[in-house]
Length: 367
Length: 162
Image (cartoon, rainbow over all chains, first blue to last red; front, side, top):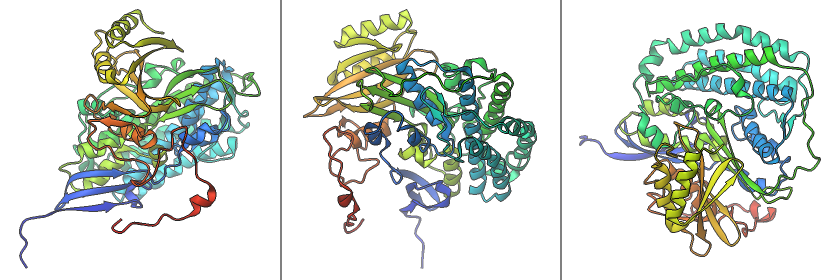
């Protein structure tokens, strides 16, 4: 049998492939081992949250928001409750703001740890995975002792948080933060300093700055392409303007930098947490809010910096107890487009690492 | 807070595209009819000093008698924000695609098409994104009737070749 050149063909990857991090399917067009194009097929986890919101009251919708980016539940709810508060003009007690920031940043660390862990798993590195999940477990324990749920705490309410944290929360958080520098050193050594990781990831999957901006990429992926932009700094919400932290930016534009920037962000988040832990005042955790949440007719667009990208909440109220429209702009959904834009020319093994570096969570992509 | 420069620029643009300017909760809102949508977006993108050059979000909206396509513009280099609302006819929901300005508008427009049935002229690949291709109706429209549990329990029969 003679082989005459190569032939283009298409294969399906997913929807349950382990390296697709959820129910994501892509049709991969191949020429030999080289990828010529990818068509992402999404919607396997589509729950129609925007439609659901229209038949629920403002309060009833809060638990659903946790399920968007289920690896970092609190930050999604933060965007939603703040958008409603903005419409109603509710002022929050200090302690509630601090607790919200603590939860949101813990969620960010948990999400980034999963990203590094699954990134290493995709190139068959089991040990970094177990290290990251060991430490993420401590964050989930903190969520559990406060709210009862590990991944979707449903802790925020319109006007504050549902209840105060238990007494053992602050010491546990403090010991977690004390162990943080050692953890980061471990990840550095075992994952980022690893020769295999570097040779598989450096200079792979270049996303140039102009293309990233044109594709409307947001979040850490944009910052790894050399744009220093973070909503927490550009348009500070909650009390983020009180904390002293940097916005890390890297100029490599490659898969390695997109992983490494997560490590730097964990470092910055722990900085915020340390300051919050030091400054948190005593007091009530819930503002005086009307029993029935009925925002005045109007529109609001509120943006927050989710671990996966920017999240925007466009809420239109018609003056009743149910919203007329809730639009959720999720970062991961827009970031998916990056894959088909940069994939041409890379091999299947690179497809896996490039996909991992995008840091998608399908709950957020599919809404 | 809306800066005076941005307010002046939006005022000029509104006069050119025959739009109305409103302000809600600290954000300027420019409402135009659908034929002017792309001209407005390009105009906002090229504002001197305060370019609104990043399309943050694009979504559809059903207002019973007409549709709206809502563009949330911002910038990576400044605090300026602008919301552009394009009115689209309900009987003939057609609007020009913004993918020529921002490649990333691709998925956002596909979603608006999927949920509201708004046709984006010039879109490279206008197909349903979340729902399957032979889904009937557009679920985010206000007149869409949500099917009963009994109906939903019926398994969809696969077509040959699927």
